[in-house]
Image (tube, rainbow, N blue to C red):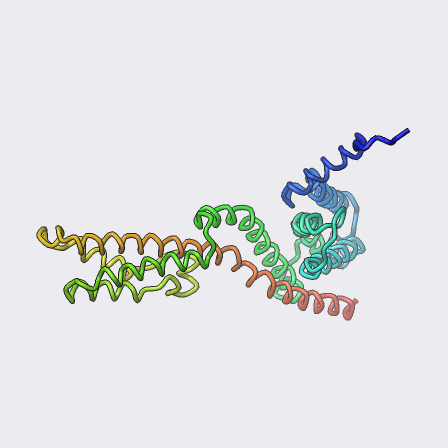
Length: 295
């Protein structure tokens, strides 16, 4: 008897689960699996700290402190391997999505583990430096999680299905029309247009890119100049066309600057997160060496 070509119910269910897994975000991966595991780890650490009688008091030098410190050390080393993991493509339990989900939630759990490890004892030393760097790494990573959850949609909406080269080309097209339309204008008006054409979307420093703040601008000043034209000049079709093109140019510049601002916000956290991670590993090495030296 010929075998049926239709997939089994179990196979269809497995396929459905795989499709759902492929479309869910890394924070919700497998119904918040790593959030639950990280929460359980924190709960066990808190109960151990609260219930185990360690004399004279819980701190990093007790057996509980060493246990929590070892767990924290292993977590930090493992979390720092995400960059290496991104270069390998696998699926299933240890897919990149699962690894990233674990990276986020175990990274947050590290706050509890490391704080309990310290026994709430801080000072001006390498131990507190390692703790502070750890908090900086976690805070910058949290900013990255929020950025990647919110900004890509805003970036796509701002581009309106245009790529960055297409945005640049659209501005170039407006500039070419402006150059042509400004030819018959009087020198004072042509000078305003030339000044506007000299203003590019990439002017300004990093802070202006991140905040989106720019004082004035040659294009806006040219628009103000054309708006202040006398009633007789305002009826000139050439001036009306140039002013309309300047308005289009200003809108295109604003879109491109929003695009660069969103991209900068999407990337700038890495300039803190990655160097701080290496600094944390160095401080952690000094912390461990000093602990065993004075043990």
